Length: 262
Image (cartoon, rainbow, N blue to C red):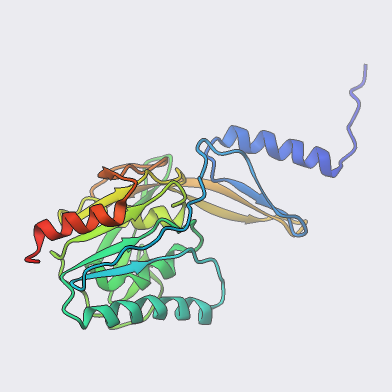
């Protein structure tokens, strides 16, 4: 008996995509139609929406920087985003700041390169992480002279950025909403003795995607690598915090105060 070919419909396409994404089993691979909203297979973990927190009064000797999601493509918009973070760092640095709180609780991802470049003054120059492929090969990424880089290629940034004190205490805040490129910033701060993270484990998308453009105008973004820290710690799922906390800002301030003379 001859097999009966099913007609190609939108429903059959979605059924096929569901099967593909389920087998991929990363929770980060997605299909984006040219005309419909992004279609993502159900993730292993739910990226729980974070409520807006009341920010407590932060002592003057502690800087506070909220790094939000960013997903624009134009170079002008990227540079504006970077400049916004840099201006905030410089404004607070001038008041004799002794430590920093970096708030990633609202960062749902997007383009990691402007994010890295924006916080470059709070990171030392060099490699901050790797993308590790299934065959074990690694691609380095990090910041240098105010710019983000991937292997030997500069991605984006504002040059001649002053690098902060590498020993300055930095508290990093995470939530279950911190995802994808937001998680890359958590990785960038891993394995550093002056860093401590507070809050909740991240969403669980600490992987890297590669975009494929399809003939129907859609794009298929497939997970092709896993994030790893500078010291080789492999992620791929949720990134744990050093201190689980429902009051991460207050706990971060308390930790910083034990290390500074205030």
